[in-house]
Image (cartoon, rainbow, N blue to C red; front, side):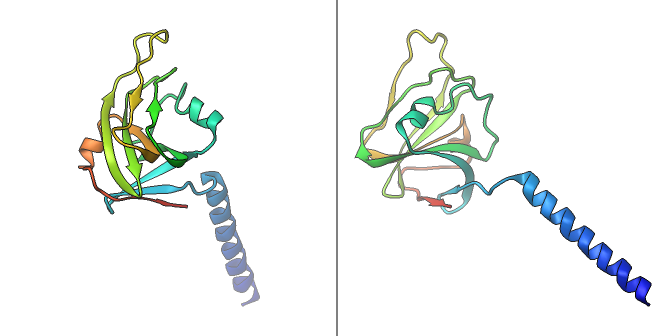
Amino acid sequence: MRRRVRLAALAFCAALLALACAAAASGPRRPVVVLAERQRVAVDVVDTPALRARGLSGRAGLAPDEGMLFLFEAPALQSFWMKDMRFPIDIVWIRDRKIVGITPDLPVPRTQRELPQFRSPVPCDVVLEIRAGAARRWGLRLGDSARLER
């Protein structure tokens, strides 16, 4: 009887240890943007001038449900470039938790000398960069909701 209790306790401890290791391996939980109340996107939040300037530069890509979220202090006309980008993206422009613009399928620049700038159609305070074509696949439309869950 004691042996069974010890074995059960050991098995329980091993299971707890396995769960703790799995949680540690997955890393901290990332914030999520919920678009149109149905599409969840894990995001890296960018909220300083230095991080904004770097953006997705040099990254190899984004997972299908991943993005980068740029937060600004106040609504303004925002301007983005694709310096050192290695993959195409969609830009979703957001204000007051609503999508106010979508700039789809931005290609990788041919040269780094002449980088086009992409501007928000109206002042916005949040910008989401996602994989090219994702906005279309997810059926995003102007006026759809966009909220951040931390």
